[in-house]
Amino acid sequence: MGDLLQVESCRQDGVTVVVVRGEIDAASAPLLQSTCDQVAADGHVVVDMSEVTFIDSSGLHVLLLLAMRLLDGDGVLQVRRPSSKVQRLFEVAGVTEVLLPEEAR
Image (cartoon, rainbow, N blue to C red; front, side, top):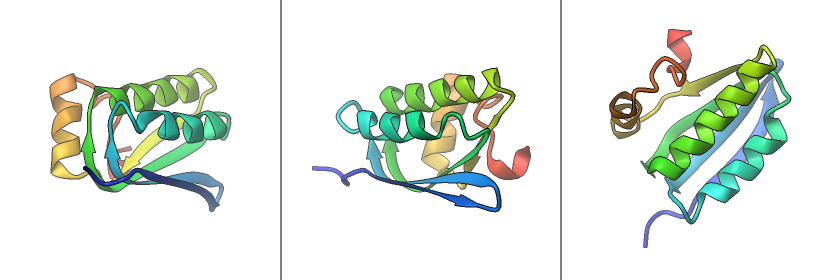
């Protein structure tokens, strides 16, 4: 069994930070989706993925939905410290123009 997903959110300096820990897969993606639904109207969201140990297309889908919702409202989604595995998935999926690391924006 993999690492259980943990998702927390808080406001820091006018930015909503969503900290994600563990594995994001089809079974755990609804938990991430629930948090993303709650923060989608916040305008500026940073998703800290430094402790994500696995992500599949289900997790990627959740992040892309959040990015599109934020962009529709003139907001922005930034991804903080994705691991090399997570960054590689972004590259292979061709979503690096939408899910850029925080320091690249």
